[in-house]
Length: 248
Image (cartoon, rainbow, N blue to C red):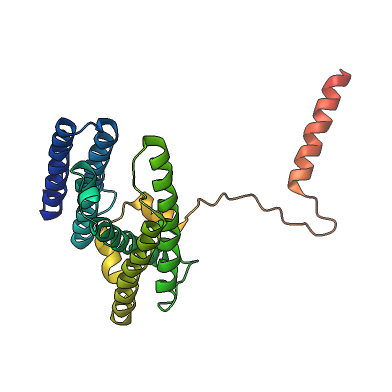
């Protein structure tokens, strides 16, 4: 059993406050179904880094744990207590923080694959481009998800086309923050310096490295002319024995 550390404290506090705000939101508004799911799911996401560490799956850096907790907390707080509706700049802030968090997760993932999978090599100058492509693609699907949620629950996650354009613009700002930081970091550091601190589970390391068990097959060596093949001789002998028994 691992001891509790400061990252566990951040996870527990964020989850507890979100659940408390969920109760307040249920008592004070009439959008109970959507808000219950928002509060519970956000609290569960806040606890994931702690659960991963104690289960021995991985240990996320403290900075990333704080960013995950802050991003999820801001989103839950905005939905549960209607800050998205009351503050015009709130949605922009949450999109920027969330994009920085997702981009940092992508950066860690790429570095892990580059270190463990010997068949994959990322040049440091291409890492920012990969981060940008992955995160901006994800942000496009996120906007589509917001539209679907609006249609199902009859809410206003997307206020207007201008809101979508502004979200994408600040998503790009968040990506630039991480890509520039990643580029500067890789100039003086290597992936080994922080990947080892993740303490990945052996099975997870093998999955990332794409290790597959190799099945050994018997190799038949062609024999020289005039030298009988033992396997063929054995098969021929067994056939002759069966044929002789059938005759009797």
